Length: 119
Image (cartoon, rainbow, N blue to C red):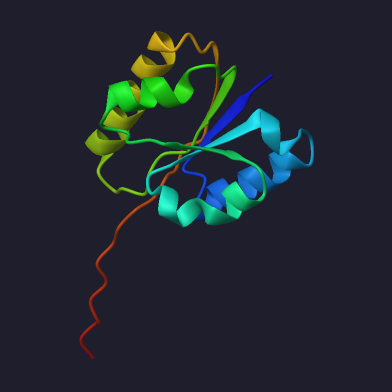
């Protein structure tokens, strides 16, 4: 089976690739990154690099081509609508690339502005 890890250069993505590599060889793992220049550590270790953009379905469809399992890690955004758009685009690209298996990683976060309390 061939795996794709999206967001592979991010904090969580790097850990997912590292753990997955304990189970399967790097030649069966494709790392999806927004900026391939930041993925030199993966290229040097023998991973296949694919440039992805959550807002470019055609680019993601090409990146997902030949993949059996997508491990989807969303980008770090705080707007729910952006996360929904990213996920919908990823699902569309998976459908077009004939990928049938998905591991979905989700984030729950809150952005709170703290003000010093008056004394």
